[in-house]
Every structure is written in structure tokens, then in C-alpha cells.
Amino acid sequence: MAAFLVALGIAVLSGGAYVAMNPEVISKSTTQESTPDSSSVFTDTSIQWHFTSAGEIDAMPYTNVAVVVEGKTYEMGKFLGSCSEIGANGGIDGKGLVAGELSAAQCYFAGGGQEIGVFAHEDGGYQIMVGELDEGSAEAPAFRGDFEIKVDIQP
Image (cartoon, rainbow, N blue to C red; front, side, top):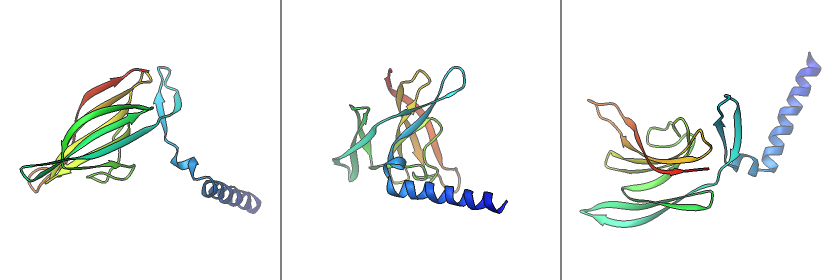
């Protein structure tokens, strides 16, 4: 039993050292898609977000948002507030990406905003959707949802 634990410890340390020496292993965007037979297929997806100031209107900041999916740029438009990409543990609610979402950005100002997300589609394509954000109040809980498809990217 002791030999097994020592071997397991060495394997864990070796794996950690490998990841430390090869950071691209964890920075590579890997997604999982379901296939009709319920098996999983892993694909590499390149998604990049671009934010540029769109100035202010009535003292409220706006941001232009574009997303590049596998080398093609999609201009998503002008959004109220400042925008930033969210990670696995980020976002307004700290919950990270929602189910099926590969990457997302949130634009937020004065208690609310919108989320732009790139979602995996079962046919192997992608959908870029925009949903609503609200931080909530004492009378109403926080809200994140009501996503609508804005761009359907076929495989």
C-alpha cells in the first residue's frame, strides 16, 4: 500500500511539473461537444474578444464589441457600460460561464447590462447569443439569462 501511495505521489508531482513547464497545456481552449450517440468529441476553438470605446451618451459609457471565432470577426455592436471577458469563475455573479458557453463577455453599467456569449451547437457549429444581466436588489434576485441568438455559425 505504501508503494502505491509513493507511486501516486510521484505521478501527481510529475504531472504538476509538466504543466508548470508547459503552460500552453492549460491556456489552450478546449471544448467538449455532445454528439448524437452521447459520446464526447473534443475540439480546439479560438475565440478572442475586442472592445473599443464608443464614447458617452448622456454621461453613460458605451463599448463596441467584436468577437473573433476561428479567425472570422463578428461585430456585435454597441453596448452600454464597460465590457470585459469573463472566465470560468468570473462575471458579475462570480459563477463563470453558463452551460454550453465556450467564452463570454459582459458589458455592465449601473446595476445591469448584457452578456455576449459564444455557445457550442450540437451540429458542430457555434451560436453567438446576447442575454440580460441584472445585479438584483432587496426586492428581486440577481438575473442572468434570456439569451437570444444573434449569429449562427455553421460548421
